[in-house]
Length: 92
Image 1 (cartoon, one colour):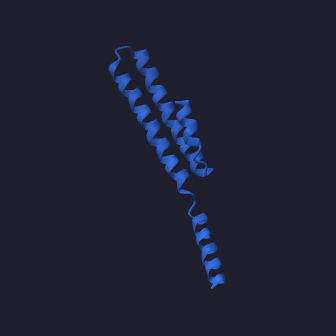
Image 2: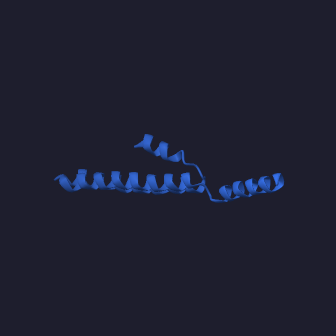
Image 3: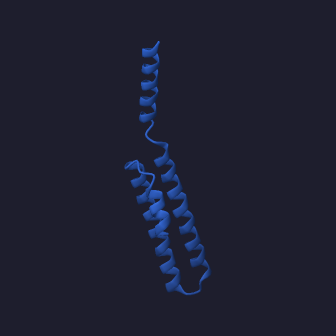
């Protein structure tokens, strides 16, 4: 009986390890949502300005934020590192 319980416990741990870590997947989703919201806000600001240079700069910044978010989300997912999310929050 003790052997069966040990084997069952080990099997359960192996299954959990094979899941791939949901924390990094959730972090990647959070990063994408956070940076998308920031980029949308920048584009809204760009739409409200009457200065073309400021509008272009805000739109370029929005593009950079989106690209940074995609790269950070990929990094969080590829490295299985949910702590990347906090680094993105700090950078914003």
